[in-house]
Length: 206
Image 1 (cartoon, rainbow, N blue to C red):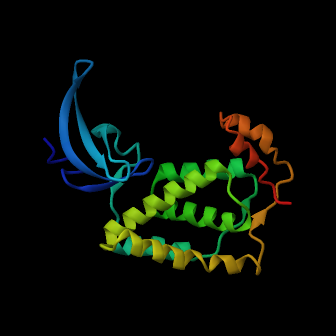
Image 2: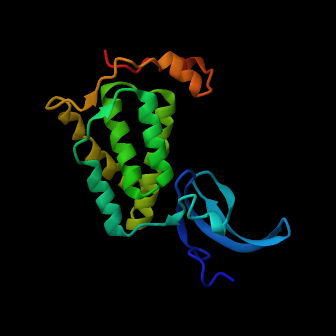
């Protein structure tokens, strides 16, 4: 049944919106009178099982763990200069969320690099902090699996690549000021009434 499928049982995969996981079962289930194949994927980071229709796996961005060389390339990307980005946090958040959904390891590394650098300039709003934490954890886990290193070793490697970015701020500006930011209004679009999050709304550069 699973001979011609993209993933096999016990294969490590990346589910961009969920984390690194392992295919533990491939099974068929009747749905609306049609037999449909599913992957059962165990996600260690959340200790959760998800069931994904085989036909939808590619659309969801589920992919194999990268090679060690690809993992190293993603690490190297973290140390590259950051391109100019908007100071409108809501636009920035959506751009990075779209990258996370694409789910390549370079896209995930780009999110980590962007938000790490932004956090050195000004504290991130709650939604961006959560996005940063999710992307960083996903990147650490995949690199650890790809290279055979411990997560702690990978954390240190990420920090070593990211930290030099702090020195770049004094050499050249990397943010585009957006005087039309109206974070109070934008927060309504996030559907959040958390008072703490409202304190983070004002993310305009002074």
